[in-house]
Every structure is written in C-alpha cells, then in structure tokens.
Length: 440
Ligand SMILES: *Cc1c(COP(=O)(O)O)cnc(C)c1O
Image 1 (cartoon, protein in one colour):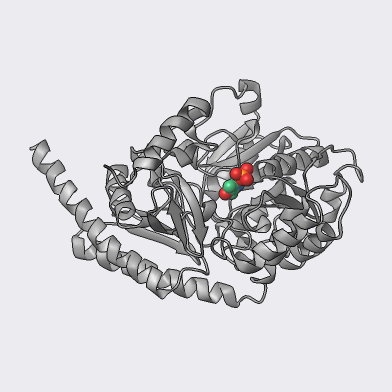
Image 2 (image 1 turned 60 degrees about the vertical axis):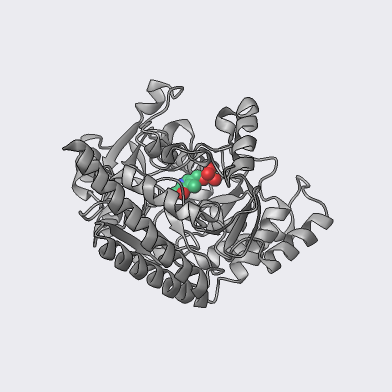
C-alpha cells in the first residue's frame, strides 16, 4: 500500500464534512495534483504525518514558525498563559507589553490594534484610511494577497493565483469596483492611476516584498517612488507586512528599505503560531479607531492571552538581530545548493530570496512581477514537489507560495534538502525529456 495511505483515507473522510477536506484552500495540495498529507506533529524543522513519514518542513505554517515547531520557550509561555485563563474580554498586561515591542520593532508604528488574522488587519487598515481621507477607492497590486475580505479579493495572489481565480464569485461588483489594480514593481502604472483618480483614492496597499506570488522583490527605488507618489496625492500608504514583518528583518521590509508607510499590517510571526495579527501606524491615523475615534473595529478574542504570550516569547528570541544573520546564512547555502543542483541537471530555474524567504521558479527569465511568475512551468514544479515529498522534504504545494526557512533548520537539514533536490531536478529533467519526445 501507499506510504501515504492513512493521509489519503483521512482526506477522503474530511472531504465529506469540510469543503475540499481543509480549512484553507492551499492545504488541499490540489495544485500539485495529489491528496494532502495529514500532519500529526511537528518538532523543530520537522513535521511527521499520520503514516509516520517525517519531513523537513519549508511550509512553517506559511510563515509564523520562524523558530521552528514546538519551540520550548514559546510552548512554556503558552502553557503558563493558558493556566491563568484563555480569554477575558478585559485588558491584560501582555497586550500592553506586545504593543510596546511592536512599536519598538517597527519604525513607522506609533500605535497598534491587535486583531485575529491578517485578513482582519488589512480590512481594518483600509477602513482607517477611508475614515481618515473620506475617500472610497483603493489601489492594490496584481498578485499581492492581503487576505480574503471582499475589497481585496481582486487580482489576488496566494491560493487565488494557484487556482486561477483572480477574483472570487460572491464579491459584489460594486465592492470590487472600488478596488483598482496595478502591476507590482511598476511605479509609472501607479502614477497613471493616481492621476486619473485624483482626490478619490484613500489608500495604496501592497506587500513591500511580495511573497504571495512566490517571492518577488521590489526593484531598486520602487518603494521610494511609491512613498513619494502617495505623499503627493494625499493617499494613505499601507505596507502589508503580515508575511515580511519580523521575517526579513526584525523591523520588517520597511526597516531594510528605510521607507515609512502610514499604516502597517502584521500577523503570522507576531502570534508565534497562535492566531494573532495587528495593524498600526501614525498616531494621527490610529486615533480614528474606536473608542478613541469613530471608526469601528472590534474583536471578542482580539489580543488573546495565549497569542500575546506566544508572540512575546517569539519576538524575545528574535530581537537582538543575530537570528537574522543565522537565517540569512542558512538560507544562502540552501539557495546556492539548489542553483548548483539545477545547473547539474540542466533545469533552468530562478531563485528569488530575501533572508529566510525563498522561491524557486521554473523559468529561465528573471521574475519581477505577477506576469513574470505566470510564465513559470508549473508542471515542472509539480514534478519537483512530488519528488521532494517522496524524499521527506515538505515544500509549499504551489509554485506561487514562498518557502520559509526557520532557526531550527540546521546544516544537516539543509544538506539533506540539497541532496534531495539533486534527485528531484533530475526527475524534472527526465520528465521534460519525455514531454519533448511525446510532442514530436
Ligand atoms: C497571510 C497573509 C495575509 C492573510 O493573513 P491571514 O491570517 O491568513 O488572514 C495577508 N497579507 C499577507 C501579506 C499575507 O501573507
């Protein structure tokens, strides 16, 4: 029987009671044409499935687990918090402590509001921008993903890119009509849309480093130009750093590129693997948020004690900055190893990387935009993904998701990954060969 037998059986049962058998679409492994692996446990860089197969994990819960699975300190903090009660609906000291940490970490944030998911963070940040400007329209980048609320489920990345759903049924057309889209890394296109809609745009939201179409880095000068254009047009600039916050640097992408947005969205690492997110920014903007201002936004479980504890315990292990040097060194050697193995097998790839975020695109051309990512050979990715999985390496199951390296990935894990990649690239080369033969 298959070494994935229990996972397959579990998935079939789950499909009877949950759409696609999952709680979030990309988890279905649909875009790599197979059943998902059902996880039993994780420890450090490894996850183990219900069949007992172990994998070196590069999903990392899609970003939060920068310390690896079941980090001792984080576990202890969650356990201690849980023993004191899991939710109160009244303020706690831990919220104040994490707020202070966020403000110290992220240069542009003066006040912060905690929410439960990245989706809530971007939804609320847009509401602040609209409340503050009295304008309705917003601009986003094609291929950037900001969660699944209506205004931003237009030309979105992540699971939407994977499944070729640029916008979703169920999003009213008059909502979508207020969302304008421009290509990422194209300041001219942004300028044209701003000029054509002068006085009507509340906000421009983007991932400063795009991680939901695979990893795409900002071109030199792009973010500075974006900052200037938003200032000139009185448009609130929102950096969605749900993925990049505390990931590419302790202060996020804005610390690396030295650009101050007006509002910032955080999530993922912020909660150390427990549901948690936040939005924050300039005091004059955040003062619009109720009860200080009139813009309403609330949450029964927001600032949850378990999430605050996990977040604090995670940030404490990251704040001295050494973690990022280590992550960069580990990820650099992984990227080099992948390039070497691909070259050996004669498979053209493009590696995009910043710190511990990596994408391996199956294309020979550089990738700077969503349009570029669409030229990638997703069949080759699927072959590669499956060959890696069979060798005990868990990659995100889509060409359009970023790989995450954690502090628990040691040299041995990286070496094993590179070795497996050698075989997987070979498999890609062979299947590419057979594609050609079958065509002729
Ligand atoms: C993951 C992600 C979100 C959505 O966060 P959820 O917690 O899944 O709602 C929003 N923006 C970016 C950039 C993300 O990577």
